[in-house]
Structure formats: structure tokens, C-alpha cells
Figure 1: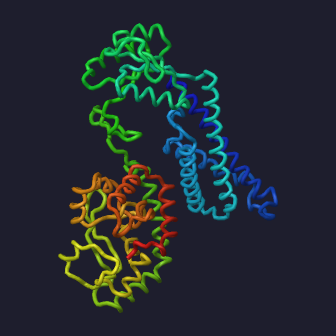
Figure 2: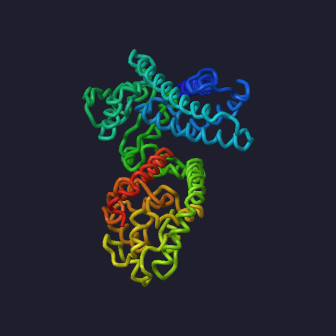
Figure 3: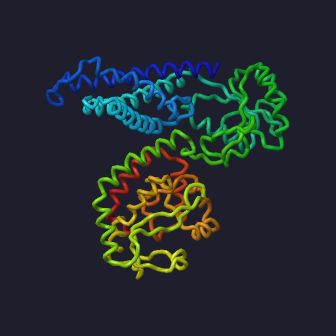
Length: 468
């Protein structure tokens, strides 16, 4: 029944989303061609032709909303901010997709103002819509409707934590019937909920009380009771759910894989393991890097000539780094130092007044121009525009023994810049703090995060005190 209600709710939500998307395009058309707000303008086509892209817009946007988790149960989402970020991300990807389609079909006369306003309207109205739905559900639950009644089996530390979490988050619309526990006295109270019996009373409690879900929070030594608990719940038509004692090692939204029917819970969530997310990030890299190489080609050529003129040796400096899945690759830079012995170089950090730097090398390091050849590492798929900075194998071996969770950064492609760098952790700064930001990036990646880091990098480009 719960799942059926969720399906009906999602169908309603999809219908509303489709209406909001369609209305946004119609409103954008009206503002562009039916008013003088942007100056008098006439479209080369009629209204029907400007609405034709809805054939592609609606299914693509609904698909994006689904992939980004905008149709997951409302009870599990705490605030509108997380949904708003996902809506913005979906609209950015959707706008790029529609623009690409118009270009492919050679419909280049389609109004760019109209598309821009559609993106703005659909984002604003979708956020307002989701906020309204959320507030409506909260109101309904506050009136005693759409409440789900929970029975918790096990009143130990884990059971009390579940009870406390539910009681502190009324927006979920859950009401705790009570606890069943074999080791505590009946009618004892925890977090406002009572011990109403022992585990053996489960069948009687379900028969005599309104129970929608049974949450099992037993410690591993009592797991032999699980089979009978599940059997009783299924016999009574009540859903049984288990909170494993090792939940503290699991991510907020764990991913479950299957090996021949055996469930495998991933301990650490990595959004870029998702094929769709990985494709979007790769597309983001290519779309930005290819034009950047073309636009910056005069600077690249000038820098190459100056490196050659000011110091004998190769123009491009290659250094071994460890990338995604600990695979080694050679990262490219414009050479900013005098040619030196390779064996000594791999064990040395660059310092602020490093005597190995050339005069022109100091300039290109301070302005990060020396990093530009990494555009070609990105094209080769060895790096990404945004991600944790890669390190030399010698220092990786050293840091993984000294810094907790250091190797987690290698779950994703390394980047030219990253979350740690835009927060000031570049060069000779705290490795521990840098890894904290790297892990935050790995576990919480979104396209919007990449966009923010990209613009913050430009803002910090000429005023980073740690660039030397």
C-alpha cells in the first residue's frame, strides 16, 4: 500500500512537473514576443513552431529529474535546498541538451532570449512547486493525516538513536508506537516512547496496534531472531526493515550492488561511479577544454617560446603522478625550473624562494600558466578540469601511511584545480585539510559543485599566496 501510494504521488508529481515546464516555455515565448519588456521583437516562426521542442524538452527534463533523485520519497528529504540544487543542475544540463539538439537540426534561428528565459522560469517555478508540495505535505501531516506508525524492535543504543532521529524530524510524518525489547522493563520510556513488550509479543502487538513498519535495531548477537521477526511481519502484512549495527561505516545514501544474488553494500558513496554522472562530467570537461585550447593557443605558443628562450632544456616538463584507481600517468607542465636530476627531483617540494626556478618560471607558476598543458591530459582522459590534485608516487606512498583516508582521492580523476585549492590549500599547506576537502568532493560531487569551483578558481587566479 505504501509503495502504491508513492507511485501515485510520483505520477502526480511528474504531471505537475510537465505542466510547469510547458508553462515556462509558453511564458518565455509571451515575454519575448508578446510584450515589449525586451524591446519589440517578432519571431520568424509562429507560436506552434516555438513550442515544438517540448517534444524533447519534457521527456529529457523528467528523465534528468529522475536520475538526480527528484522523485525519491519526500519523507526522506529534509529541506528544499537540496532539491533546489538538483533542479538547477537538471536545468543547466537540460538547457545544454536542447541547445545541442537545435544546433544538430540546424534550427539556429530559435530565439536565444526565449531559451534563456525558459531556463530561468523553469528553474524558479520548479523550485516554487517543490517547496509548495513539501509545505502541503507538512501541513497534511500536522493535521494527523498521512502518518506512518513505526514499531522499533530493540531499545539499545541503536534503537534509541533511531527513535531520537525520528522524534527530532517531524517533517517525515512518522509516529513511534513503541519498543519491543527482551532486556528492559515494560513501560520504561526512552525519547517519549515506551517499552510495550518483548520481541516474543510481536505478533500480538501488530494485531492489536496500528503498525505500518517494523524497524529492527538488534545487535549482531541477536540476529538469530531475524528470521522469525521477518516471518511474523510478512504473515501480518507489515514491512520489516533492518538498521544494521555497522551503519556508522556506511554513506548517507548507500549503494547496493549484487553479485549473483548476494547484496554488496558499498561503504563509501562515490557519485562519479554512476555512468550518467561520469558522462556529464566528461562532457563538461570537453566542452570547456576544447574551446579553451583554441582561445588560449596564442598564450600557449608565446609561453612555449619564452620557456625555450629563457632557459635551456625542453619546453614541456613531464612528471609521473598517480591518477584514478592509482594508475600512473605523466602530467604535463610548462617547464618553470632549470633542468635537474630526475632522481633528486622526485623527492623535493617546491619552496617559495626555490633557487631551481627560472625568472620566467616564477612568473608562470605565480599565474598558474605553467599548468595549461594539462588541458591535453584532460583530452586524453587522464585528468579532469576539476578534481583532487594528483601527487607523485613517492609522496603518495608517504602520505597514505601518515594521513587518514588519503587514498580515497584516487576514486576519481585528478583535476587541474579542486575544492581544496579554491579554499586556500595549495602548495606548502596542510595535507590533512587538503584531503578533507578532497574527500568532501569525492563523496558529494555534483555538476553545480564543479561550476562553482571553476568560477572560484578564476577569482583566485592572481591572488593565491600559495602559488609559487
